[in-house]
Image (cartoon, rainbow, N blue to C red; front, side, top):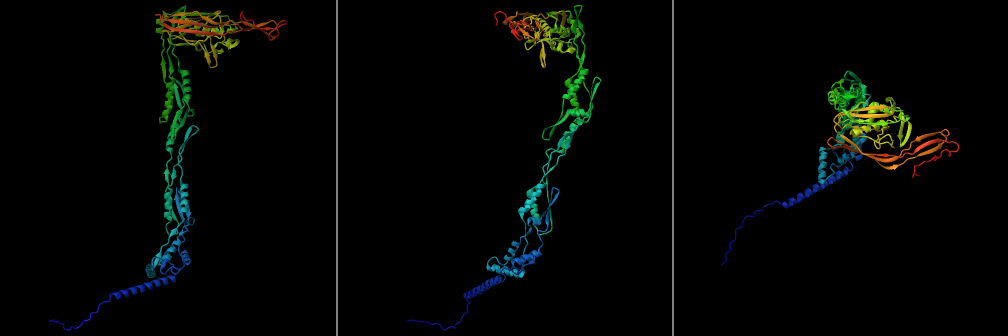
Length: 623
């Protein structure tokens, strides 16, 4: 059986619920309406103010609302101060310069300012524009003023001022003015940091003031390479040396060298850039010292020998004195040089050194009993015009007579018998010139008889022989191959010399007799022995005499202008042995004598060959 129960009827309650969907729809519709209104408002607001600045906008506090671009610019130009009216005053290196604002185009950046004024309320999406328009309308909005200039032009002008302010340093220099060195002072240079100068100028113009602006650009000093102090110190050294005279004395003699003369000895030389050296010339000081030496120096005299009644006797020695030339020069230079260091020196006494003889009278006396004649040689001659009638032989013999040559000393014929001058007793004679005889007019002609004679005496004494030269042709009064010519021609001097290589002094005696000259050498014998070989003669060339007829002589008169001399080569060997037989010297004397053809002039007369004819008379076997 089915049972069905039914519920009792309940009263019905009706609940009202909020319709969110409908609310959202209405909100959206409202918002769309607002947006639509805003867009429409913004569009209408924008169209209403199109081409003009929106209300509430000012530029630098100047209201430009509602003005178009041209009107706004015109209003700003009237209201704002003129930024191009002033100038930039630049101080650099002590010099003042001015750059006008107008020259660098200083002005307001009017285009950018107006662009920003017109952009107010017109940028972004519509809502953003509306918000900005409302804020501007209610609160206003200000656009700042902006300054602008031609940066390149300003940089160029400032750089030019900086470059003009720069300067190179000038070194100090030293000039000689009369007897004083004068310094031209150094000048400091200056450098400008161009980049920093331009940056400073740019900063100074970056403001809205129309007034002048001042800037100062620093200059960095550049020191010169040579300072005034350095040059002055060098000049002062030289000037101190030349400031005072110098009195030089020696053994009572004195000479005052004035400051002007000293100035001529001194000069300042630049050895490197900025470095100087004082130079004191020694040549004039050497001349000064030599003057003193001529007045003061007395050579020591060695003991010597002479003969009295054919017996050797001692000539006493004598002490001497001298100024040491090198030390005296150094002393004067040192005294002057010390002035450059501030020392004051006006007087200087030169030291005089005593000189002792090398061979004293006691030493000579101890040897006098042992003196013997070591050698002798005689040459005979004809007294004629060719030898100044014997004067040119006698004079050198007299000058040499009594001359003492100490151990190790050199005898030089020209030094002892010279100078070969008329003032020294010589006259004219003959000589061999370029291989031919010049019969007269040669000063000292014929003295070779003297030099050859002494050469042979020294040769036979066994001394060490030095300079020697044979004549151009052989003269038969001399030993073959052992003649010694003397010749002086300008700077060329042909002398005869030998060295006393014994342990004792030697005495040379010169003896003049009619038609002969003799030299004897005395000394202490050391046992040496001399051997001379016989001359070896070769390449003989016999001579002859030619005759020439001339109108320059009276008819039949003859005149010899050249003698005939045979030519040949010769060789002589000298051997000198010591007392023990050891060879001390072994010399070979080679002589080359040329052949000279004799020449006789004959005055032409009728029957003779024509004038100018030369007749050769060669010896047998020659053409």
